Length: 138
Ligand SMILES: C[S@@+](CC[C@H](N)C(=O)[O-])C[C@H]1O[C@@H](n2cnc3c(N)ncnc32)[C@H](O)[C@@H]1O
Image 1 (cartoon, rainbow, N blue to C red):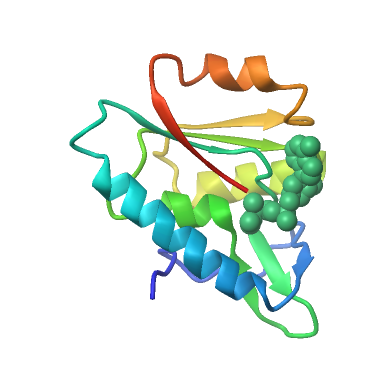
Image 2: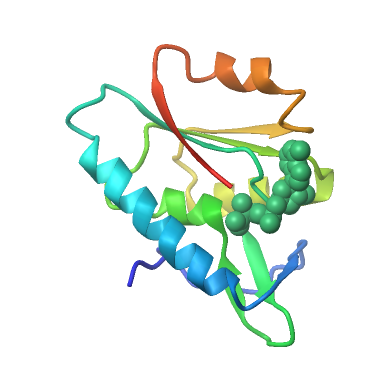
């Protein structure tokens, strides 16, 4: 099974709740991230990961005291990392939490954070990965 590179811990920042189905979603998303990033590393000059609904980076399974690493961290944890990461999120507290967590766990990652409705932020998002190919996760 594909795993993030760290176990999320309580850190005083926002942690949205999710249903237990999220474990299956994250397993599949993480597997796809890994297949894509490794599969395309010698084919495309630059690989950019864009998460339009990025969340806070951590989730808590409803009714359980268990934390999961969300889609941004699955993409950051792949064995052949993407060249650039763009995270869009409409909630300011969630994006701030994500930013702090990414800087803590992956301080060297080339990560951009876009606050707002992704439908309104298309131009700001596409300006970052010009001349590149992308994978989008939700
Ligand atoms: C189900 S969460 C997914 C989080 C993350 N992708 C994951 O799987 O761990 C969806 C997130 O998208 C955000 N969101 C919803 N509509 C949005 C929009 N139009 N533009 C940007 N973010 C949005 C919500 O605030 C929420 O944090």
